[in-house]
Length: 508
Image (cartoon, rainbow, N blue to C red; front, side, top):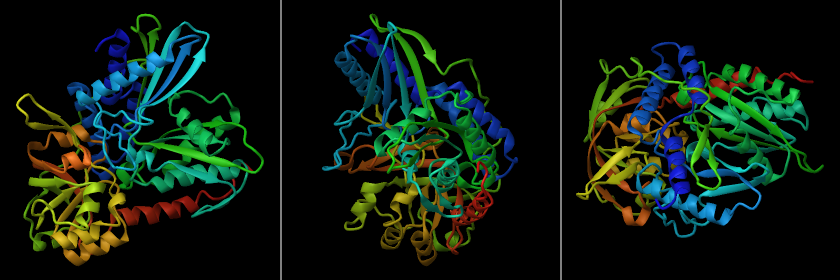
């Protein structure tokens, strides 16, 4: 790195990616105590805590999806923002080389990954001037799984389970509750939400994301919003969606709401959903030297102990490819499995490709893992996995049943579950959906013994390439079986009924 400013920014990126701030840790530890020991939700949250400890100890990404790096910079009047932008770009590129960030910048027209997180519009940088003589930089790494669960409502609107949401405080309340419901486990619950009331299509979402930079234990200065925030925190967990959408006591870990004026014709409620891996930190920098003067969000140290709970492997069922249809049809929802042998990563680009082409390797009786890992190549040219948690599976719903049948797959690993077409395909072909714990990138990276090879690296880039991984003791839960049963469908239907319990007016 060429300057102290760039070194400081690299440290900010590294710490944001690998070390959750104390307020987030406190929220997760509280949730850990609320879940009943031995339940699926408890297993999931213990795995999450184990992952947080590993990420901090090894200085590796908490989650393999390091998202779209978004910087909020406050700087003195006259400060050279052009030079600061270049310093940020250099730091982002270096962090990507060091595998603290996954290369996530993709040209939407060509599908080409830049490989360094630089490109048109990436990283995102917002500048604000102030009268102070120091520079403040805040960074959030918000992964695609939770980004895809952002939602914007134009009032009035009819909402499932809640009825009409009108242009008033009651309507706003209903929109926020629905936003929590619709995320289910696909956004890696239990999650955090930032809400923007008012503005236009663009500024409403910006306001919502700004709320995610607030400390979790602050109190909204607007009494009406403070009351609404507390109401949401008191009632959202009534939905019992739970960690990873497995059902459970804790669904929401934080809610922050902001407001801005709107034009008469438009009334937007915008919700930015963030997963449990709530990665945001900040630094105050010397404007001249670039040295770090202080850290933001680190009010005090909040250590986490590696839990003794988590997956119990005593009764786990071992799956090793090629898996027989007979073994798959003996599985049922709720079974814990341990995967051994070779699995193959596959995300959006690979599924699209396989619909029209043959696979470069045999998938008969095999396992596809919805995962875009963080990879590092050593001096000898060998690839190593540094982060390897599951991605959201719902994006593959248009393809999955067809690919299972075409290639004879027996298992699909991902998070958040899949829909009716895939469920029917599992039943028809004799396959199962296995839910890994979303965001637990270090936990699952430890299960990878070797990288056997890779296909489509040049064509698709690191996250979308087809990596062939040798794993051992890789745990997951059967959440969709070959008999037409789906835990995700059951939790969705049950939480919708509970959402209806909250439709009566509160603030009228």
